[in-house]
Image (cartoon, rainbow, N blue to C red; front, side):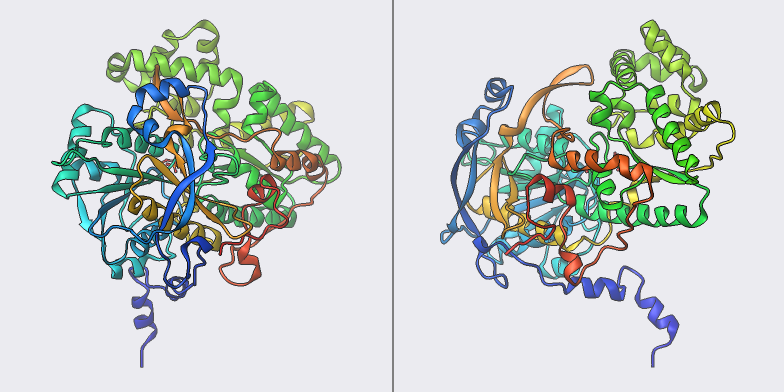
Length: 568
Ligand code: FBP
């Protein structure tokens, strides 16, 4: 008979009872792939839709082979691919931050490539591709990772493949491992990388002059990789927001129980406010800041602080000395005065990188102030040291400010406290600060993310077997069966200034002020401030009818009849 300690030992290395049960969850497939038990690869044909972007001409000049081959046409299923080739060697990698469901993309790829082709894992991320660190993925591997959270099977990193040497190393990896195709599972920057790689590897890689195909898969909890009805959401967003929704709901329940705290909660999501918007729609807190709205209204930091302080005092007049403030991670960059400061800082730090690196830590702020115009120098000097330190910290490899390190929740709580005191010194105000971020990225995928990613894997593998390159796999019509499609990556590219230089990028999709989801928030937000109307959604469900819920903003924006998603 097993003892309790035997039982506990069995749970080491991820083998919890929960995980074993989750692995056994059945996953639906889009009708295009045929029988759910034995999905088949599909072929693709032009759907009649062609993508045009602002900088389309420059993109066509920079990516001639890709644009010529795809004509920037969106592809749709053309039925089962009866002539799918065998003997293909396909590598798959994760790139950027983890997001729930990544393992199911690998599972879907393995299923659709079947025993006739070889799937190789790259460890970790683009760095692993440069270093040629690949291994063969077996069926037993994929049976173990199905429906599990995290990217731990392959690991991930944020290396941007940009130098000639790096591109040549990738080519060497392709030759060494006789690769026919690479699947890049990543966000906007990683799929930009995939577009560049697709063009670079388009032809002349192998001895016979042919190239290596590159296919992207849309991942990021931020939800900022979107393209209207063609790409309603990236995977990982649903799981992350349902995890945050539970936590915010618990805090809201606590505020009404303890009756004395304000919670300032920053939510991960880098630039766009999709995560904050979705969590607000789920939980209905007293205050929700949406960065895009603040930018549009050109609100200053002082105005935002005053708005929150007024809400605190007006609720206090009703005896509500508590509440929750949701703050999008990227807020600081959307406040016009802060944005101007950050833009000038980015350019100045890039221009004086060597000098700045040589300056002692204690002198860095003064050095930076010396490089700025008077208004920006004054603003930088007015900010608390804990914010300045982070504004001056290293950018990531894509040149982005690491916004997750800036304690906006602390800045706002401190400033609101001072402002409330100035408005009415008798109003009680006690604040707690939270940052909900990493805890949302690696949970077990919701049923939505698990099914969505499995079908994305089937689509990506089908695109490879259909000989396509430079496309991103997508599933549309998520409320009515699901339809696999392919978006030409070059059809998403535009020019953006980064690191002081113009670059071709897939732009981040921001929250649109006139989107149905945003309009819904605007129609209810004042009522949520005036009274406690919040909702505590509880833990995400993997079984039963409540499990079949898609993100609320996806349902609203796609004019779905209900919150229920339907694949298959
Ligand atoms: P991706 O866009 O690569 O998916 O990353 C999303 C994210 O989780 C952001 O929300 C956050 O700002 C960032 O990653 C944190 O990065 P890191 O994992 O490097 O700390």
